[in-house]
Amino acid sequence: MELLEQGQKIKLGVSGAAETGHCGIDAYEKGMELGRQIAAHGAILLTGATTGFPMWSAMGIKEANGISIGVSPASSEKEHVEIYNLPLEYMDLILYTGFGFPGRDIIFTHSTDGMLFGCGRIGTVHEFTVAFEDGKPMGILEGSWETDEVIKQILDNGHRSSENIVFDSDPGRLVEKVIELVKKERASRMPTHTPVIAQAPQEIG
Image (cartoon, rainbow, N blue to C red; front, side, top):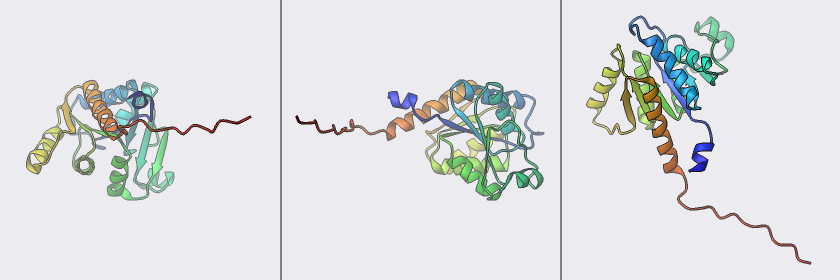
């Protein structure tokens, strides 16, 4: 278990709307707080390198001196800025996939250990369904938007296990819950036996 605590940093993705006019008055602060809480738990933030809710989380994690990585649909920085009109700010590193938004979504969610979902629409739902098929630990942030209710309807109609999915209206509690799910999943993958380390032969004479 010591290796679990001291090993590779947990990577948490934040998904949400790039256009946030429908999100409500508390979305900005909740997005920022998600980023702060990810930093507080020593995890790394991944986003789709976009505006809106994911960018607010990136702003929050940078405010808390954490690490922010963006996964872009573009094939270069020039395309990222000039064709997709996406930002460069608040990200320590941007990975340019060149696969457009649908392909970017797959690479983005595959690259995380767990996902957090805030206010969003079709793009957010797409990232949720990709992560759901992957069996990712996921946290759904409840708020003054409808995204959490849409996801609940998808789960109710899907008749599939959702034991790896948690809901909460508090960003701090939600991050904690998802990190616990990630740790549980990592622990289940650890070997149950102690590896045998061969000793070097003793010198004679």
